[in-house]
Image 1 (cartoon, rainbow, N blue to C red):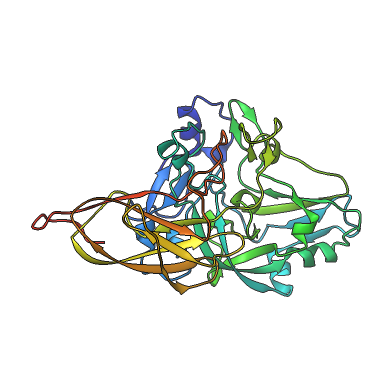
Image 2: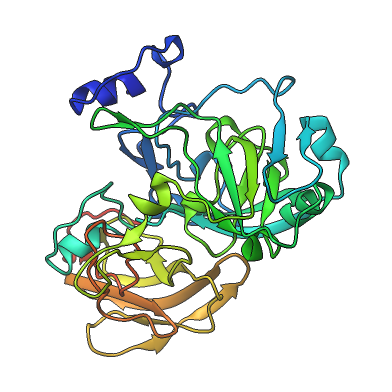
Length: 377
């Protein structure tokens, strides 16, 4: 496991003196190679590891996106503070206080804004910066917690409030020798009052360290950076707020966008096969399985195995994402499988940081010749 200090030194970045950084793993939970591809401080779920797991992503297989490293938070000392010019009754809540409030459960997908980034290069021939995710920076879970609107009302939300700034408790983020502070990103009050959750459980158990213990935001339909982990405070303001995570990062910059870029908020629709990349399969009958998801849900899913024609897949279940299956009689040779949900395009407009790749992904597989040993999936 690479420590955050090691990551920064390897990248030639400055390391601020902090005893907590030494010997602290970037990710706490085990990362078996059968389940994950590790990208520095991040871990991408292998899609073949989700086959047969049901609609909810097991916590052990849920992807991890860390800007620094997973912190160790003392739940007994933790407080969630709600303050700022946008409220009349500032709050300071313990974890016990939070759990004593009315709670709800919500099934929702959380997905990194850069999920699918590598396909800008491999499919569209365009250079982009950032972690080279394929499609595994996404997971679906049932989250339990307190609606953010309830906390804002308890804090005396002013009618003039416009933004809520959640701030995480992970270490301050240092890049290029510049300290950008703790991870934080403003959320419009309109969204905060809609469906946002301050969650303390994930799939029926307390949040694990890597996924935000003791509490995190869950912002359905929006890019993962909005769902701040290890939540420590919420600043509510009557004026617009900003941070490097909405001015320097998470903006669409490129020839199709204005000079100042376009802020990344909602996600886009995607689809994936529950198959290894470059899978080798035996000839014969297969049942292709996979999942499709998008901020507005998915109506239909279609699969192509010959590069020309499409046929409707059978929906297995719906929820945070849609699970589907389609039969395929595989003949020997090289094949490219494709799946699309609704009207997924064949190409995504270019942006320099590779956000929101939503085009149909071309998934290569090889079907072995008769008599040649192959790996079944």
